[in-house]
Image 1 (cartoon, one colour):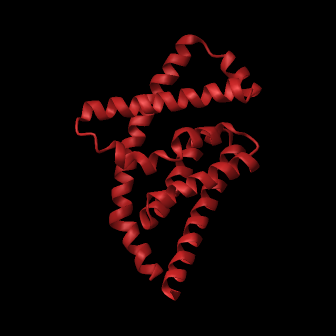
Image 2 (cartoon, helix red, strand yellow):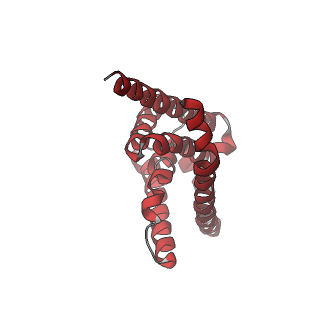
Image 3 (cartoon, rainbow, N blue to C red):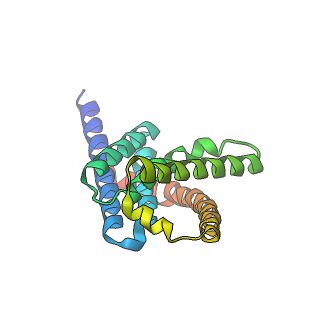
Length: 184
């Protein structure tokens, strides 16, 4: 019984630490204007160690906690909505998407997933939550610029997907054994 309580306490502490760090990174995205896209990516990556050590379910619980706390404490919601819509849980769900055998079909599914969630997030920000500053910013964009940004976002997402796979290998082979050795 004592060992189970100790492992539960350690799991709660580790998940809490990584959730707190993810929330701090999202807060940094509110403070640094150009980091609105980078910070949700980094915050999502910070949830991976909790999931690697204690399972995807605990990683998704961390994602849920960061999302709910972010709604309460973050002043600018654009980075948070990108985190909630895709970038927070994508690193945790990527292994499931990678099980699709056909590379072509896998890439198409990931791009559809990416475009659907990001466009849905921006639709919610503009129409449900009436984020006027975002609306004013987008009104200054021409149609060709918007199409170019969507194309660049898709290419960036594909690069992110490859980098995420490589980072996962690096984490599992190099960092995780060191963390486990330290935590024992």
